[in-house]
Length: 105
Image (cartoon, rainbow, N blue to C red; front, side, top):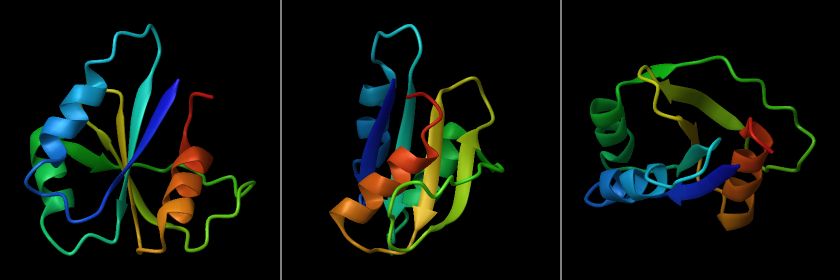
């Protein structure tokens, strides 16, 4: 199961929110956070706390996403977290990018 969530200028609360989603008790899950064009330190906070590293993840393109992802990062630890960076283009677009890049369907 993949949980897709948006983060737009959420620096003060993003780490707490992601930790809550990661605490889900499910045998196989991942959290996909789409940083939808944040201008604050949202991504920096996530990168620091979860030790994010750039990864290659193909965006299949089967879903209309508006503006595509500009970068994909994953936790260097065994934390099932993926952070997608993209330009801000609205709720439907961030959800579609997250769904398109989710690995667990």
